[in-house]
Structures are given as structure tokens and as C-alpha cells.
Length: 326
Image 1 (tube, helix red, strand yellow):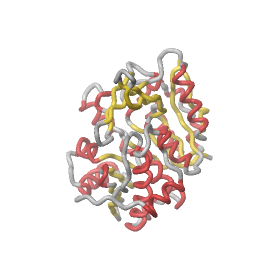
Image 2 (cartoon, rainbow, N blue to C red):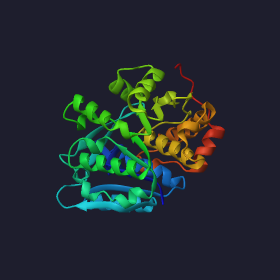
Image 3 (tube, rainbow, N blue to C red):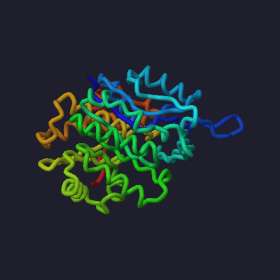
């Protein structure tokens, strides 16, 4: 039995690593891809996880298989292709550590995942299935992702969705919005950023945006990350907001994935009964998840930056909460 299985992109992030002796930018090779990042966080917190995806049969792809294996993520459904190279993403950081990306993926191996690559028996053995929208930017990966979601719904998994919007990977913004929303009817847990809330709903108010998803798609739990202001969580019966923690941020890559993994960790440990969550439960989970997300910004890369349970507990005990106007 797996606690969480995820499907989607697995790629190489090239993260800024200073300047050469000639003042040219240097980049560090780091493993990445949002669904895999979430699993890495969960595995580090002691959960049994599995990944479904595709990488190139190249040095980058082989290194990613090794990284996931070392992280304790089951790779039986991670396949390789000789037809495309592993997707690469170059990370650009501003003075605050906020990141943007340049992707080399036309196409990348992650887009070659097919419905035939989806192992129904693996999903059937999972408590939670997690996915995003980067794997739905084009076929065959779009069809494969949706096939995995259907199997997860049939198997009775809790379904967790982080659209993780990367507009530069979509033909148009309209297609991105339509495709992302088309998957919502199968979702139990939705994690979005404040910017994604506005893009998908046109709403800036957190409660109004959550209500928009409740009324249209029947989602049980909505998580909205607010950057350094923390995060908001809501069910139909309760809502809470909690600040982030004061840390020395150098790279925000993977912070949202650490948040998601840590929140799912709390749900798994408490039984995953979404309808029963109270305001106090949501505040407790948000505190834990915000600590994980905050700590992930203190190191470069995504998978290498995922915090341990001891680090999260130390953060909760010792780090002051950031105070921002809401």
C-alpha cells in the first residue's frame, strides 16, 4: 500500500550557483518537477510513495531515477524513452529569491507518457493520488494524466491537484485555463497560489475564490498559498489563515511543493477525513505546512531542499512568524 502516488513531470532544474572566474553565470544541476518534489517531501517525512512518469534515456534521466530511488520513492512506473531528451529548466532568481523558469522541452521526455504507461494496480494501492497541469500541456501526457485521474477516482483515492501554472508551456492562456478547470470535477484537494486563484476565477478575495470552486466543482478542501504571507485553507465548514516563518530565503523553488507535501502528511496521519476538519485543525496543518515551505526556501534546488520532521518541528518551536497585512 502506498500513502501517495503522483504522476507528472520529472526534470532537471539548473539553479544559479554564482559566477565563474570570468563573471559568467554558473548553474547547479538539481532534480525537480512539482509532483516528484511533493513525493520527496512526503518520503522525507516517512511516507511510502510512488512516481509515475517518463524521462529520457540519457545521463540526466538516469540521474533522476537515482535521485528518486535514494529519496525512497518507488520508481517501478518511471520509464525511459529513447525518442526525447529529459526536460531541462533553467531557474532565474531575483534579489528576493523568487524564481522564474526557462524550459527546454519541445517536446521533453515527460510529455511522452502515454495512457498505456499508467499502472492501474499501483494507483489502486494508493491512499492519495497527486497530479498537476504541467503534464497536461500536450498529448500524449495529457491523456495519460487524465487516465490516471480516472483510475484514481475509480479506486477511491483522495485526489490532490496542484495546477502549478506555467503559462510559457501552454499554446494560449485560454487553453491553459480551460484544461486546468476541466480536471477539477474529480478533485478532492486543490492547492493553488494567489496568482492562480485570480487567473482561474477572476477573484482576489480568498473566501470568494474558495466559494467559486466549492459551488462549481464540489472540491472538499482548498489551499491557497500567499508567498511570504503564508497560506489560507478552507472547507465548506471551516477556514483558517496562517503566516509563514522568518527564514533567510535564497531560492523559492519547490516551496509550494514542500507546503503541499507537509499538508498531505498531516492529513494522512489524522485519517484524511476532509469534511471533519475544524478551524483549529486547519490552523495546525497550515502551521506545519508553512514551516516546511519556509524552510525549503533556505536551500537551493527543490528535492534537495525538502526539510526533515525535526527541522520542521524546530521551526515551529523557534522561528518567529512573519507578520504581513492580509
